[in-house]
Picture 1: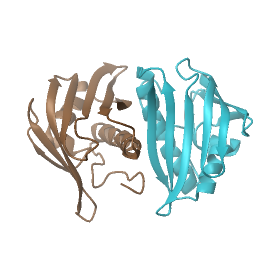
Picture 2: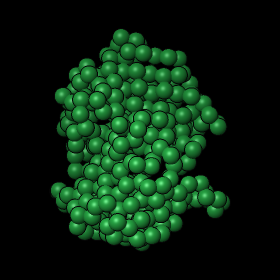
Picture 3: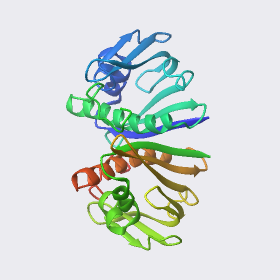
Picture 4: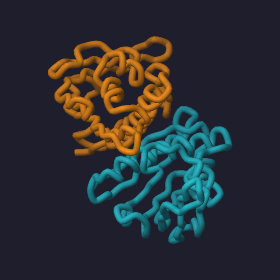
Length: 152
Length: 152
């Protein structure tokens, strides 16, 4: 099993960061503009990623498995790219030194394929987008996301 | 064992990317301004990280274990933070779609401690600095690096 992990500090209260991770409006502001579904426990959220031309390049469905008020979120990938299905995504929040520290994990990859390398880098840039959204009001969700390589 | 992996594409020939990874001048332009030592195989390179006030906050020594002309580099950490000693860092290069694709690995962490989360995110931002240096002539090496959390 392979895990992607990251740590970022955001100058915003944990309750605000939590809201950006648990509301459709929040998720649309830093990860992808196209988010549909239900964000309560047991709900399924669909994330769609389009090219700047509008063409759909990928989508995934997450089941919300855990919501720990202002402390954390856990999703399980139910559908999407084959190597994502069954993986788990967590965001754990804590306040330290006037920042909210986010410990991010995307766990249980069956193996480290080249897509894992891509996704690890891509998650880092989306976490920077999450921070930018919370600190300035404007993130870089797909399709306005930072492109990192010849895949996206 | 835990690995940090990332993939980034840089609009610059592989030979230029290789030079940024294998010369003191190159390394000083994207990772940390303070780099000393010998960059040939068997050589030891010391990387020193200072706060913007000048105070030393950390350093590490890498032994150059492999140089594969314009294809890759492998270092082994010989001294530095306890959790880094014995880990290996690799950069594998290939040209695709008019970019140099860098597959980065920082492998053989004994366990995923919170420092691993921090370093994974920090490596992503240094790879963006490497790209910026190669594409624009100006990277963000320490101490002018992007700060990502309350640790650095």
